[in-house]
Amino acid sequence: MTSTPPLTRRRLVGSLLLAGLAPAARADSFPTRPLHLVVPFPPGGPTDLVARPLAAQLGPVLGESLIVDNRGGAGGGIGAAFVAQSPPDGYTLLMGTVGTHAINASLYQHLDYDPVADFTPLALVASAPVAVVVDARSPWKTLADLVAAARAKPKAVFFGSAGNGTPGHLTGAMFARAAHIQLQHVPYKGSAPALSDLLAGQFQVLFDPLQSVLPHIASGGLRALAVSGARRAGVLPEVPTIAEQGYPGFETTAWWAVFGPAHLPAAVVSTLEQAIARVVRAPAFSGGLEKMGVQIHTDPALSLAAFQQAEIAKWRRAVHDAGVTLE
Image (cartoon, rainbow, N blue to C red):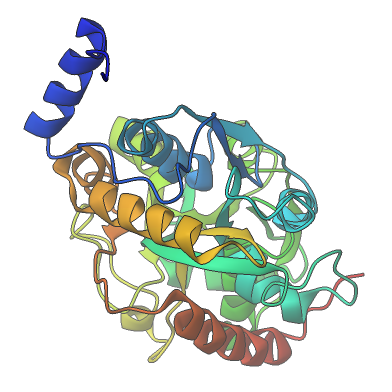
């Protein structure tokens, strides 16, 4: 005779049912122990801001804890390579980015992983534009001010990003090329240290996904000159796009998706896909991120594999046009 589950577990399941996040039906008893979600950047950055609420909601849906594991470095390459080399059992997942799974393939001459062959794509979760921000004390009010300063003193304007190969890096390089100016890139190991140095006056302008800089814009510490999306961000309706300021057709988007190592069993893939879809549809996950200017992706018909291939082709052209390569 099956024993009655402990009262605490019954209460947990009941609470999850009320929240619309009941544990997913397990495939072949997966999972039976805690999982790890590798974030290939330091804590506090835009990838972390998506990964942590995802992990907090996904763990209860799967019925096991989901531990966030920050492994930054090499434009996300260190964390991505770690997951690529992990056992294909579903217990080690990656919060992949447009950098790790689209840009790096064209940017780096040598990668320790193949962004397609070494991974099982699971779900596209979110996307956001890149914001162009300066210290609130800066005299620059628009992109035209930035461009004028760069033309007046070539090689004297420095822009920071979360690291080589990140959306901020490529957006800055693409903008410099479009504006026919020279901007000196200062790569950091994540958004948090880049933000600190921008606020300390170590460089003049930062290109970074919107959610990481929005709190500083709201507090008055930073001023947004533009966003890189095809349209204005709903949380910053007064800030024009790059395209609106004299660069028609200019558009870049950062995105975040969950990947596992290659050759995950079909049953494990099904369990994870269903659980992630349930989480991203729930207000508990989407509500907070949408307030940061992040768009949540809930279309079950969207194939992450097909989307990734299109993004690789798009960024290959962008990297080539920007003339950026790295060892």
